[in-house]
Length: 377
Image (tube, rainbow, N blue to C red; front, side, top):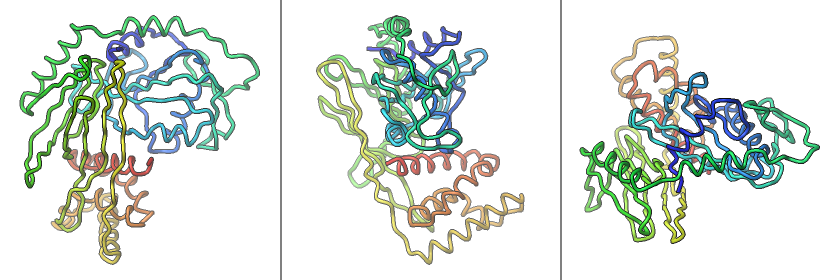
Protein backbone atom coordinates (compact mmCIF):
# COMPACT_ATOMS: atom_id res chain seq x y z
CA UNK A 1 0.00 0.00 0.00
CA UNK A 2 1.30 3.44 -0.94
CA UNK A 3 2.03 5.96 1.82
CA UNK A 4 0.66 9.12 0.22
CA UNK A 5 2.81 11.47 2.28
CA UNK A 6 5.95 9.70 1.03
CA UNK A 7 4.53 9.73 -2.50
CA UNK A 8 4.12 13.52 -2.39
CA UNK A 9 7.70 13.95 -1.17
CA UNK A 10 9.01 11.78 -4.01
CA UNK A 11 6.91 13.67 -6.56
CA UNK A 12 8.20 17.01 -5.31
CA UNK A 13 11.76 15.70 -5.65
CA UNK A 14 11.12 15.80 -9.42
CA UNK A 15 11.30 19.57 -9.46
CA UNK A 16 12.12 19.71 -13.18
CA UNK A 17 9.41 19.98 -15.81
CA UNK A 18 7.62 16.72 -16.50
CA UNK A 19 4.41 15.39 -17.93
CA UNK A 20 3.21 13.01 -15.19
CA UNK A 21 2.52 15.43 -12.34
CA UNK A 22 1.62 19.03 -11.69
CA UNK A 23 1.73 21.14 -8.54
CA UNK A 24 -0.54 24.00 -7.55
CA UNK A 25 -0.66 26.48 -4.71
CA UNK A 26 -4.44 26.08 -4.65
CA UNK A 27 -7.41 25.33 -6.89
CA UNK A 28 -10.90 26.81 -6.84
CA UNK A 29 -13.59 24.82 -8.61
CA UNK A 30 -16.38 27.00 -7.23
CA UNK A 31 -15.78 29.50 -10.06
CA UNK A 32 -15.97 28.80 -13.81
CA UNK A 33 -12.36 29.84 -14.43
CA UNK A 34 -10.95 27.63 -11.69
CA UNK A 35 -13.18 24.73 -12.71
CA UNK A 36 -12.11 25.05 -16.36
CA UNK A 37 -8.39 25.15 -15.51
CA UNK A 38 -8.71 22.11 -13.26
CA UNK A 39 -10.51 20.16 -16.00
CA UNK A 40 -7.83 21.21 -18.51
CA UNK A 41 -5.02 19.85 -16.32
CA UNK A 42 -6.88 16.58 -15.65
CA UNK A 43 -7.50 16.19 -19.38
CA UNK A 44 -3.86 16.90 -20.27
CA UNK A 45 -2.39 14.57 -17.66
CA UNK A 46 -4.78 11.78 -18.63
CA UNK A 47 -3.88 12.08 -22.31
CA UNK A 48 -0.15 12.30 -21.68
CA UNK A 49 -0.05 9.22 -19.42
CA UNK A 50 -2.00 6.37 -21.05
CA UNK A 51 -0.20 3.61 -19.10
CA UNK A 52 0.51 5.09 -15.66
CA UNK A 53 -1.10 7.18 -12.93
CA UNK A 54 -0.54 10.91 -12.99
CA UNK A 55 -0.85 13.35 -10.11
CA UNK A 56 -1.66 16.92 -9.09
CA UNK A 57 -0.23 18.08 -5.74
CA UNK A 58 -2.13 21.03 -4.22
CA UNK A 59 -0.84 23.27 -1.44
CA UNK A 60 2.74 23.71 -2.62
CA UNK A 61 4.65 26.85 -3.63
CA UNK A 62 5.69 26.54 -7.26
CA UNK A 63 9.06 28.27 -6.89
CA UNK A 64 10.65 26.40 -3.97
CA UNK A 65 8.28 23.45 -3.26
CA UNK A 66 7.43 24.79 0.21
CA UNK A 67 4.46 22.84 1.59
CA UNK A 68 1.94 25.48 2.74
CA UNK A 69 -1.24 23.37 2.69
CA UNK A 70 -4.83 24.09 1.73
CA UNK A 71 -8.23 23.70 3.40
CA UNK A 72 -9.56 20.18 3.90
CA UNK A 73 -11.58 19.30 0.79
CA UNK A 74 -14.08 16.48 1.28
CA UNK A 75 -16.00 16.64 -1.97
CA UNK A 76 -16.61 12.99 -2.78
CA UNK A 77 -18.60 14.04 -5.87
CA UNK A 78 -15.62 15.38 -7.82
CA UNK A 79 -15.91 12.46 -10.25
CA UNK A 80 -19.38 13.79 -11.14
CA UNK A 81 -17.73 17.04 -12.27
CA UNK A 82 -15.20 15.13 -14.37
CA UNK A 83 -17.91 12.98 -15.96
CA UNK A 84 -20.08 16.00 -16.74
CA UNK A 85 -17.42 17.91 -18.68
CA UNK A 86 -15.06 15.32 -20.21
CA UNK A 87 -15.43 12.72 -22.93
CA UNK A 88 -13.71 9.46 -21.98
CA UNK A 89 -13.30 10.74 -18.40
CA UNK A 90 -10.43 9.25 -16.37
CA UNK A 91 -10.94 7.95 -12.84
CA UNK A 92 -10.03 10.83 -10.53
CA UNK A 93 -9.54 10.65 -6.77
CA UNK A 94 -8.94 13.61 -4.45
CA UNK A 95 -7.30 12.81 -1.10
CA UNK A 96 -6.33 14.98 1.88
CA UNK A 97 -2.84 14.26 3.17
CA UNK A 98 -1.82 15.63 6.62
CA UNK A 99 1.73 16.85 7.22
CA UNK A 100 3.10 17.19 10.78
CA UNK A 101 4.11 20.86 10.47
CA UNK A 102 0.73 22.04 9.12
CA UNK A 103 -2.16 23.27 11.33
CA UNK A 104 -5.03 20.83 11.94
CA UNK A 105 -7.26 22.52 9.37
CA UNK A 106 -4.63 22.38 6.61
CA UNK A 107 -3.61 19.43 4.44
CA UNK A 108 -1.94 18.79 1.10
CA UNK A 109 -4.38 17.82 -1.64
CA UNK A 110 -3.41 14.87 -3.84
CA UNK A 111 -5.32 14.29 -7.07
CA UNK A 112 -4.68 10.86 -8.59
CA UNK A 113 -5.64 10.45 -12.26
CA UNK A 114 -5.94 6.83 -13.33
CA UNK A 115 -5.44 6.12 -17.05
CA UNK A 116 -8.12 4.67 -19.33
CA UNK A 117 -5.97 4.46 -22.50
CA UNK A 118 -8.41 6.62 -24.50
CA UNK A 119 -8.25 10.22 -25.66
CA UNK A 120 -9.97 12.56 -23.20
CA UNK A 121 -11.50 15.81 -24.46
CA UNK A 122 -13.82 18.55 -23.28
CA UNK A 123 -17.46 17.57 -23.76
CA UNK A 124 -18.79 21.14 -23.81
CA UNK A 125 -17.71 24.76 -23.59
CA UNK A 126 -16.46 26.08 -20.26
CA UNK A 127 -14.91 29.49 -19.64
CA UNK A 128 -12.64 30.17 -22.65
CA UNK A 129 -12.17 26.51 -23.63
CA UNK A 130 -14.31 25.03 -26.40
CA UNK A 131 -16.06 21.70 -26.41
CA UNK A 132 -14.02 19.11 -28.27
CA UNK A 133 -10.67 20.57 -27.17
CA UNK A 134 -7.91 18.02 -26.46
CA UNK A 135 -5.07 18.89 -24.07
CA UNK A 136 -1.64 17.34 -23.56
CA UNK A 137 1.30 18.09 -21.28
CA UNK A 138 4.20 19.97 -22.84
CA UNK A 139 6.80 19.80 -20.07
CA UNK A 140 5.01 21.32 -17.09
CA UNK A 141 2.35 23.12 -19.15
CA UNK A 142 -1.05 21.82 -20.25
CA UNK A 143 -1.51 22.79 -23.89
CA UNK A 144 -4.27 22.28 -26.48
CA UNK A 145 -3.07 20.09 -29.36
CA UNK A 146 -4.41 18.41 -32.43
CA UNK A 147 -4.27 14.69 -31.78
CA UNK A 148 -3.04 12.93 -34.91
CA UNK A 149 -0.24 10.74 -33.61
CA UNK A 150 -0.01 7.73 -31.35
CA UNK A 151 0.46 8.51 -27.65
CA UNK A 152 3.92 7.48 -26.47
CA UNK A 153 4.38 5.81 -23.13
CA UNK A 154 7.41 7.58 -21.66
CA UNK A 155 6.58 7.85 -17.94
CA UNK A 156 5.53 4.38 -16.78
CA UNK A 157 8.95 3.31 -15.49
CA UNK A 158 9.55 6.62 -13.69
CA UNK A 159 6.12 6.66 -12.02
CA UNK A 160 6.38 2.98 -11.07
CA UNK A 161 9.72 3.66 -9.37
CA UNK A 162 8.28 6.63 -7.45
CA UNK A 163 5.28 4.61 -6.30
CA UNK A 164 7.47 1.66 -5.26
CA UNK A 165 9.67 3.92 -3.14
CA UNK A 166 6.53 5.24 -1.41
CA UNK A 167 5.34 1.84 -0.17
CA UNK A 168 4.29 1.75 3.47
CA UNK A 169 6.05 -0.24 6.21
CA UNK A 170 5.38 -1.21 9.82
CA UNK A 171 7.58 1.58 11.21
CA UNK A 172 5.68 4.27 9.31
CA UNK A 173 2.36 2.76 10.40
CA UNK A 174 3.31 2.67 14.09
CA UNK A 175 4.72 6.20 13.95
CA UNK A 176 1.45 7.35 12.37
CA UNK A 177 -0.67 5.75 15.09
CA UNK A 178 1.46 7.19 17.92
CA UNK A 179 1.45 10.65 16.32
CA UNK A 180 -2.33 10.62 16.00
CA UNK A 181 -2.96 9.34 19.54
CA UNK A 182 -0.61 11.91 21.08
CA UNK A 183 -1.89 14.83 19.03
CA UNK A 184 -5.59 14.12 19.74
CA UNK A 185 -5.39 13.40 23.48
CA UNK A 186 -8.12 15.95 24.27
CA UNK A 187 -10.65 14.29 21.95
CA UNK A 188 -10.75 10.62 22.98
CA UNK A 189 -8.53 9.15 20.21
CA UNK A 190 -9.22 5.56 19.21
CA UNK A 191 -7.94 3.12 16.64
CA UNK A 192 -9.15 -0.09 15.01
CA UNK A 193 -7.47 -2.60 12.73
CA UNK A 194 -9.56 -3.86 9.79
CA UNK A 195 -8.80 -7.07 7.88
CA UNK A 196 -5.53 -7.45 9.82
CA UNK A 197 -4.02 -4.75 7.62
CA UNK A 198 -5.79 -1.39 7.66
CA UNK A 199 -5.26 0.84 10.68
CA UNK A 200 -7.90 3.56 11.10
CA UNK A 201 -7.66 6.25 13.80
CA UNK A 202 -10.40 8.66 14.79
CA UNK A 203 -11.12 11.21 17.50
CA UNK A 204 -13.85 13.64 18.47
CA UNK A 205 -15.52 15.45 21.34
CA UNK A 206 -18.37 13.27 22.60
CA UNK A 207 -21.91 14.59 22.93
CA UNK A 208 -24.95 12.59 24.09
CA UNK A 209 -28.32 13.63 22.62
CA UNK A 210 -31.41 11.58 23.56
CA UNK A 211 -29.47 8.37 24.20
CA UNK A 212 -27.48 8.79 20.98
CA UNK A 213 -23.73 9.45 20.84
CA UNK A 214 -22.44 12.15 18.49
CA UNK A 215 -18.98 13.56 17.90
CA UNK A 216 -17.84 17.08 17.02
CA UNK A 217 -14.36 18.26 16.01
CA UNK A 218 -13.98 14.90 14.33
CA UNK A 219 -10.73 13.76 12.72
CA UNK A 220 -10.45 10.41 10.91
CA UNK A 221 -7.25 9.12 9.28
CA UNK A 222 -6.31 5.97 7.43
CA UNK A 223 -2.80 5.54 8.84
CA UNK A 224 -1.43 3.07 6.29
CA UNK A 225 -1.81 5.56 3.47
CA UNK A 226 -1.51 8.74 5.56
CA UNK A 227 -4.87 9.94 4.22
CA UNK A 228 -7.23 12.14 6.21
CA UNK A 229 -10.69 10.78 5.45
CA UNK A 230 -12.77 13.26 7.39
CA UNK A 231 -12.25 16.48 9.27
CA UNK A 232 -14.77 18.95 10.67
CA UNK A 233 -14.39 21.67 13.26
CA UNK A 234 -18.09 22.55 13.48
CA UNK A 235 -20.47 19.78 12.42
CA UNK A 236 -21.51 16.70 14.34
CA UNK A 237 -21.33 13.13 13.16
CA UNK A 238 -22.30 9.66 14.31
CA UNK A 239 -19.84 6.78 13.94
CA UNK A 240 -20.42 3.04 13.74
CA UNK A 241 -18.39 0.13 12.43
CA UNK A 242 -18.33 -3.60 11.79
CA UNK A 243 -15.45 -5.93 11.00
CA UNK A 244 -15.63 -4.87 7.34
CA UNK A 245 -16.92 -1.29 7.32
CA UNK A 246 -16.59 2.08 9.03
CA UNK A 247 -19.64 4.35 8.72
CA UNK A 248 -19.76 8.13 9.23
CA UNK A 249 -23.08 9.98 9.16
CA UNK A 250 -22.63 13.75 9.01
CA UNK A 251 -25.21 16.21 10.35
CA UNK A 252 -25.57 19.94 9.74
CA UNK A 253 -27.28 22.51 11.96
CA UNK A 254 -29.68 24.76 10.06
CA UNK A 255 -32.58 26.98 11.02
CA UNK A 256 -34.03 30.48 11.30
CA UNK A 257 -34.79 32.88 14.17
CA UNK A 258 -32.72 30.95 16.73
CA UNK A 259 -34.73 27.80 16.01
CA UNK A 260 -32.36 25.14 14.71
CA UNK A 261 -32.45 21.45 13.92
CA UNK A 262 -29.85 18.89 12.91
CA UNK A 263 -30.27 17.45 9.42
CA UNK A 264 -28.48 14.43 7.98
CA UNK A 265 -26.16 15.60 5.22
CA UNK A 266 -24.07 12.70 3.97
CA UNK A 267 -23.28 9.12 4.82
CA UNK A 268 -19.82 7.75 4.11
CA UNK A 269 -19.08 4.05 4.31
CA UNK A 270 -15.49 2.82 4.10
CA UNK A 271 -15.42 -0.77 2.86
CA UNK A 272 -12.33 -2.83 3.67
CA UNK A 273 -11.69 -5.79 1.38
CA UNK A 274 -9.76 -9.02 1.87
CA UNK A 275 -7.40 -8.16 -1.00
CA UNK A 276 -5.83 -5.18 0.86
CA UNK A 277 -7.98 -2.65 -0.97
CA UNK A 278 -10.57 -0.26 0.35
CA UNK A 279 -13.31 1.86 -1.17
CA UNK A 280 -15.40 4.78 0.05
CA UNK A 281 -19.11 4.91 -0.69
CA UNK A 282 -20.63 8.37 -0.25
CA UNK A 283 -24.39 8.94 -0.26
CA UNK A 284 -25.99 12.35 0.00
CA UNK A 285 -29.00 11.95 2.30
CA UNK A 286 -29.78 15.63 2.77
CA UNK A 287 -33.41 16.74 2.69
CA UNK A 288 -33.44 20.57 2.50
CA UNK A 289 -35.58 22.21 5.21
CA UNK A 290 -38.58 24.05 3.81
CA UNK A 291 -39.82 27.37 5.24
CA UNK A 292 -42.65 29.82 4.66
CA UNK A 293 -41.86 31.92 1.56
CA UNK A 294 -43.04 35.19 3.17
CA UNK A 295 -40.66 34.67 6.08
CA UNK A 296 -37.83 33.88 3.69
CA UNK A 297 -38.51 37.01 1.61
CA UNK A 298 -38.17 39.10 4.77
CA UNK A 299 -34.91 37.36 5.76
CA UNK A 300 -33.52 37.58 2.23
CA UNK A 301 -34.16 41.34 2.08
CA UNK A 302 -32.65 41.81 5.54
CA UNK A 303 -29.56 39.89 4.45
CA UNK A 304 -29.21 42.08 1.38
CA UNK A 305 -29.38 45.19 3.56
CA UNK A 306 -26.59 43.86 5.79
CA UNK A 307 -24.51 42.99 2.74
CA UNK A 308 -24.84 46.54 1.42
CA UNK A 309 -23.74 47.90 4.80
CA UNK A 310 -20.67 45.65 4.72
CA UNK A 311 -19.85 46.88 1.21
CA UNK A 312 -20.08 50.51 2.28
CA UNK A 313 -18.34 49.85 5.61
CA UNK A 314 -21.39 51.27 7.39
CA UNK A 315 -21.92 50.55 11.12
CA UNK A 316 -24.14 47.59 12.03
CA UNK A 317 -26.80 47.82 14.73
CA UNK A 318 -27.39 45.15 17.37
CA UNK A 319 -29.92 43.25 15.27
CA UNK A 320 -27.58 43.32 12.28
CA UNK A 321 -24.78 41.85 14.37
CA UNK A 322 -27.03 39.00 15.46
CA UNK A 323 -28.21 38.31 11.90
CA UNK A 324 -24.66 38.51 10.58
CA UNK A 325 -23.74 35.33 12.48
CA UNK A 326 -26.24 33.40 10.36
CA UNK A 327 -25.90 35.37 7.13
CA UNK A 328 -24.28 32.59 5.07
CA UNK A 329 -26.50 29.83 6.47
CA UNK A 330 -29.71 31.81 5.90
CA UNK A 331 -28.66 32.63 2.31
CA UNK A 332 -28.14 28.88 1.84
CA UNK A 333 -31.63 28.14 3.15
CA UNK A 334 -33.06 30.75 0.79
CA UNK A 335 -31.24 29.12 -2.15
CA UNK A 336 -32.50 25.68 -1.16
CA UNK A 337 -36.03 27.11 -1.11
CA UNK A 338 -35.94 28.49 -4.64
CA UNK A 339 -34.21 31.86 -4.25
CA UNK A 340 -31.73 31.39 -7.11
CA UNK A 341 -30.11 34.82 -6.65
CA UNK A 342 -29.08 33.80 -3.12
CA UNK A 343 -26.26 31.79 -4.70
CA UNK A 344 -24.76 34.98 -6.16
CA UNK A 345 -25.09 36.68 -2.79
CA UNK A 346 -23.25 33.79 -1.13
CA UNK A 347 -20.32 34.26 -3.48
CA UNK A 348 -20.46 38.04 -3.00
CA UNK A 349 -20.23 38.04 0.80
CA UNK A 350 -17.05 35.95 1.01
CA UNK A 351 -14.43 38.75 1.16
CA UNK A 352 -16.51 40.85 3.55
CA UNK A 353 -16.96 38.06 6.10
CA UNK A 354 -13.29 37.16 5.82
CA UNK A 355 -12.18 40.70 6.65
CA UNK A 356 -14.90 41.26 9.27
CA UNK A 357 -14.42 38.21 11.47
CA UNK A 358 -12.47 34.95 11.00
CA UNK A 359 -15.02 32.94 12.99
CA UNK A 360 -17.74 34.09 10.60
CA UNK A 361 -15.50 33.19 7.68
CA UNK A 362 -14.97 29.64 8.99
CA UNK A 363 -18.74 29.30 9.32
CA UNK A 364 -19.08 30.58 5.75
CA UNK A 365 -16.68 27.91 4.49
CA UNK A 366 -18.75 25.20 6.18
CA UNK A 367 -21.86 26.59 4.47
CA UNK A 368 -20.15 26.50 1.08
CA UNK A 369 -19.03 22.93 1.70
CA UNK A 370 -22.67 21.90 2.18
CA UNK A 371 -23.69 23.80 -0.96
CA UNK A 372 -20.90 22.20 -3.00
CA UNK A 373 -22.02 18.71 -2.04
CA UNK A 374 -25.65 19.45 -2.85
CA UNK A 375 -24.82 21.03 -6.23
CA UNK A 376 -22.51 18.24 -7.44
CA UNK A 377 -25.02 15.60 -6.48
